[in-house]
Length: 431
Image (cartoon, rainbow, N blue to C red; front, side):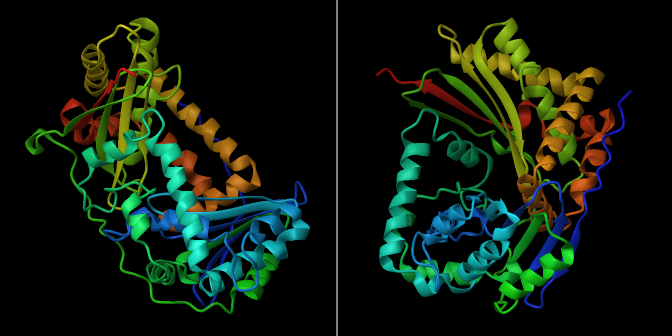
């Protein structure tokens, strides 16, 4: 029998400014610190053909100064106030965040508001060129010149059409980055960096009304703007044999040959997604998973093996599994073994023990995520921006715990299995 999930009651209050900015406050007075987290509803899926990489480029450009803040001073001022600061970009969003002593809250809000309201006043060709080169170097270091660095790009191309909003990676292409003009990036900023396309979360040592008052003080005068039309989000069906299941082979200077499988899945807010997420966990999360137990420990065919779901909101998500061959093991043999585990899981489903373990692992991860104010603020911004309701963080464990064997079987039959997958074979070049 599955035990009842932990009951969560994190305090959450919301307020919307007249300019459309959604403000979330979550008080926590355990320590005199506060987390400021801004989620913008813009990611790589909002980019236009020939203009890829813009969302990620802005993650860098936003630290290059604004009307009242010289280039490079945003980070310096925050660090001088004792803050940890960062930003990330993904397919569906971009977020900016800092955690600092409560006394620095006004500075953090002023800095965030100033760059939202006046970044273009300070954006110069020199700043753009500088950050373009930073992003290109990041692409070289993380994608082009590391083993398996192009795997995600190739898996995406197997899973989505090239013109689909999810058909390219967040880093973009070198050619598109080189072609970006000051006018191009200015137009992108004006379309997406708007208070009515943002969620501001303030979590920690502050009361909600105080948080809302400060948000009004710093952000209230920023004008709203027309939102760009949403990118395509009509759900695509799963990959199927009728589509001639996609297959690709590549090679590189990698330590081991590998096989990757990819699946097109429903969007993360679809009722089947949680069932598939648990199924992929049974298949490939951690050392208790089937792939690790069967391929790594028992058969000793793979040096590593894993599987994961990537929840997205634009009509579909995707999932993948992989195994890297041990020395002397042919990648063809490894592919057969990997597919056999997929077939067995589709045919028989997870055991009760595996399902309980998967739910327990999810609960441990979720409780850890919400324990700290910085990651809790991030989760609140995520659920407000992508799913429309920050209160979902308190019901998340109950939703996952409610998934049963029948739901997993139905979702697997529709979306999972060897006849629903793309395949990437990664061979090893000789140095």
